Image 1 (spheres, rainbow, N blue to C red):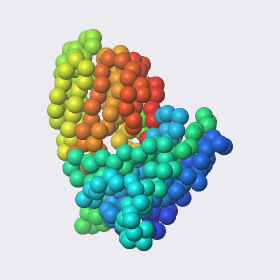
Image 2 (cartoon, rainbow, N blue to C red):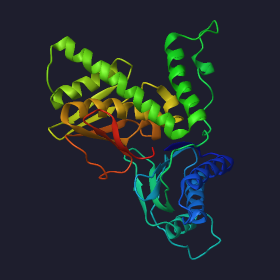
Image 3 (cartoon, helix red, strand yellow):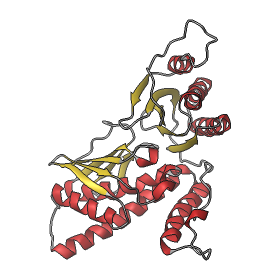
Image 4 (cartoon, one colour):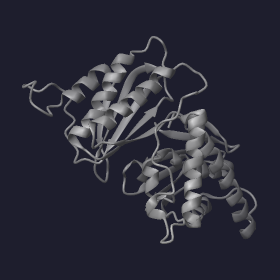
Length: 325
């Protein structure tokens, strides 16, 4: 589950805190420490406004027993000192991290490779298995944006189709909840990826499993067709590593990071059909403020539980296990 945060105003933090805590409350086991979770969420989001004002992102992974919250920012980074300062009244003294660490199961602080930080905590809430009936989260303004208009006030085909994809996903979210919207995006990705693979095979006369090198070539070609700028970093029998300099969704993906499930589903479905299973790890994402994407597709089988914020795909090309993102 992904949220975008305009970290320049305290009001945005308050709104997002209510949203995240509301999500936790709707799905938490009755014995969970919701006040402690709310305190941790509040402190980590407030930390962004104080030390890294600007765009930020929150993620919830609930694939395990307890919810795990990760907050990404684009600030200058900081030393992970989670303790009270000698002067309790001094501003910016590390109290937030101290409080968050003491109400959480564990906490880690890591620097993002291209700048900024990622703070991850295990929240003191367990999940009750249930169908997700969440109301919608607040989304970015409706597309197409004014800046995409032509001189005569009309919108071109590309702007219209981009808006169509994003707004359809938002409509599903409003009616069925965030998980349903991301599942729909994943299903579309699986369907489209399957058709593109069929045409790739037909054009080249390929029968049987695609080897990793051809899978990687297919990834790059299909993303280039929609103005992505993916390139191969490394390929072997166990994994395919790709970078990406440009998101096909443009800047809007930062306000709708759930659209990354499209990439995960396309890549995971193709790999799973050809190797018997796959795990897709979105290590870096333009949608979360990184300058480029870094995607690792692990091949040949189910590696469930080895990574947080990963998606697993079975040989039937359907998602067999995924986190809440």
